[in-house]
Image (tube, rainbow, N blue to C red; front, side, top):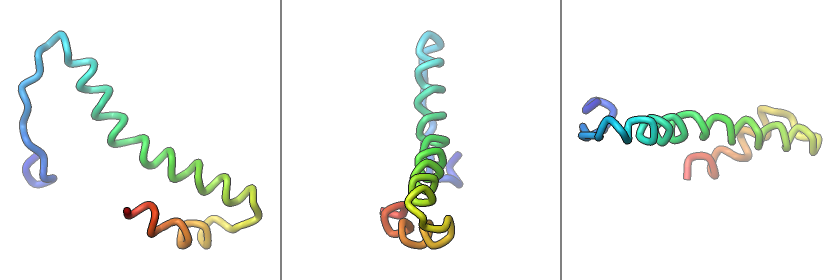
Length: 61
């Protein structure tokens, strides 16, 4: 965890599902949103790799 820059937390067992859901959203939704953005760019006639290059500054921000 520390190698990734994380800090340990104590989470009440009753709140574990909320904690886990938040972690999954933070981890996975970014990739899903980028993929959806690339799909939209492809629908606009822009190839996936040129679109990724164009969107890269926004993705990194």
